[in-house]
Amino acid sequence: MKKKLVNIFTNNTNISLDTKTELTKKLIDKGYAVTGEFSKDAELIICIGGDGALLKTIHSCDFPECPVIGVNTGHLGFFQEVRPEDLDRFISDYENNQYSIQELNTVMATITTKDGHEYNHVGLNEIVIQGRPSYTVHLYISIDDMPIEKFSGDGILIATPAGSTAYNYSLGGSIVDPRIKLLQVTPIAPMNTTAYRSFTSSLLLPAELSLGVVPEKQYENRMAIINDGIETIYTDVTDIKVKMSDTSVKLLRLKDYDFWNKVKTKFL
Ligand code: NAP
Image 1 (cartoon, rainbow, N blue to C red):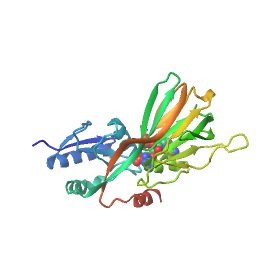
Image 2: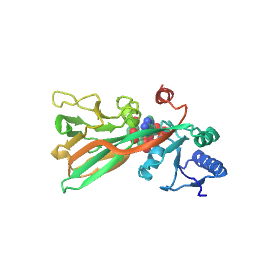
Image 3: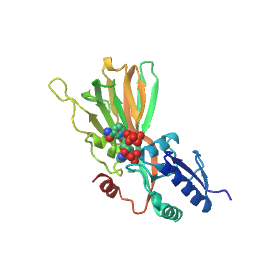
C-alpha cells in the first residue's frame, strides 16, 4: 500500500530543524512518508516556524490545495497551531480526525501597465500599494467602478480577514473574524487637510465588490505592490484592480481552536 505523504517545511532556525527531525521520526514511525519538498500528492503540509514562515511556505507551494498546519517555533504564531512540545498530541488528533479546517480567503491584485500587460499577485494577509519610498502617492480610488476619493498619503493596504491581525492592525485597522467574507481597505498615513482629502479610517468591502486604483500620472512611474511582504516594482501602471481571489488556504486547526481566544492570547 502507498504510504500517506506529508511535506515538512521550516524556517531553518536551530529549534525548527530540531523539531523537524523529531516530527519526521514520529511520522515515519506511524507509517507516513515525509519529504521536505512540495508534492501535489501530499495529504498535509506542515510548516515549522512562525507566521512569516507559514506565509513563505504557502507562496513557495503556490497556494496548495491540501491542508496546512503550523508548528510554532517563531515569535507570534498567529497562524501556527501546534507547540513543539505537543507533537504526539497533534499526530494522535490528526489520525483520529480531531480537527477542523479553517478556510481562509485570499486577495488578488491585477496590475495593468501602459503596454496592456496584466500581472496578478495573491496575498493571504494583504496587498499593499505604495509609490516611491519617502514620497506621498496620490491614487484615484473607485469601488466597483464608482469613483470614491483621491487618496493622498503613504499608500493603501487591502487586508483579508486572516491578514487583519497583521500589518493592518498596526495601522489601526480592525480585527476581523475570518468567518466574515470581506476586504478591508486601510489607509497608510492618509493626508486629510484643506489641500488633500482622504478617508482616515478603514473601509470594509463585501466579497463581491472590487477596488479600483489609478495612480496620478506623475506617480505611475514607480508603483510598489507588496503581497504578504513580497515587493514587486512596476513602472507605467495605468490601473490596479483588487478583489477577493478564488484561491483559498485551508489551515488545519485542532479541536480546541477558537479565533477570539487566539486573539486574546496573542494580543492582550
Ligand atoms: P516580518 O516583518 O518579519 O514579521 C511580521 C510580524 O507579523 C511577525 O511577528 C509575524 O509573526 C506577524 N504576522 C504575520 N502574519 C500575521 C497575521 N496574519 N496575524 C498576526 N501576525 C502576523 O515579516 P514576515 O514574517 O515576512 O511577515 C510578512 C507580514 O508582515 C506581512 O504580510 C505584513 O502583514 C507584516 N508586516 C507588518 C508590519 C507592521 O506591523 N508594521 C510592517 C510590514 C509587514 P511571527 O513572529 O510568528 O512570524
